[in-house]
Image 1: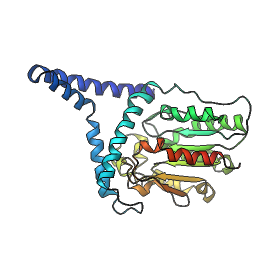
Image 2: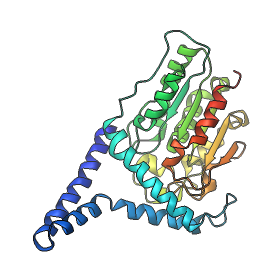
Image 3: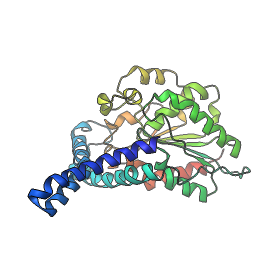
Image 4: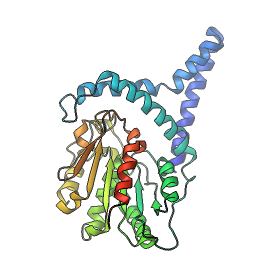
Length: 302
């Protein structure tokens, strides 16, 4: 269902582009029609760029440092093309291209659970799944559905995925969670993990709105509203977490994250935090430095 939603969104973009082209062609000619079509198809890029520029002021008092305007425009350009790759190809059409990998017998290598964020699906992790499988690591990337339901609804799905990794490896897995996926993992912890913290080796969250995000103020879906800053759901989630659990978290964040801001909202107290300057929200899931950190965790002792 999630992939079909994204195909529909892509179809709407194409419909807007076609409509603008048909409107412009009779009076303005073919080249103008083409220009209007491209503007309609990629109009969200202008909104994206404005969101990045706003971070120059939104993050002006953040400990991570105020991002420069040139840095933000470069980040916006890179993020635009990552968005196109993810939302116009990987997630609508390639969500099932890379299967989960579960070796028939434990091979001494740690498994990895990959959790995507809001309005995404497992297609986000295709390159990760290929690389982890080539290294012999068990890896599971569930699609969190319903796409626009409560984050609490994902806890049982995550539990099932963790059990699959535990059976395949005999080791506690590494969890890599992007954006809302970090909150979904914390919701799983509240329901299933608190009694046995040793079930997790380490959790790396990438741009997760642990303290909410200003962007969620305009959200209308249940999981979007749960990500509002200062909301009851986030406060209840935080109240039930132990120091042991927090010590297992590594929060990766950026001062150029145009979805989760101000930047410090992606960091929980009692956790390790690492800052990647100038990365957009989706760029965090593809950054080479993140892969280096993941490899270090996979090589750590059980």
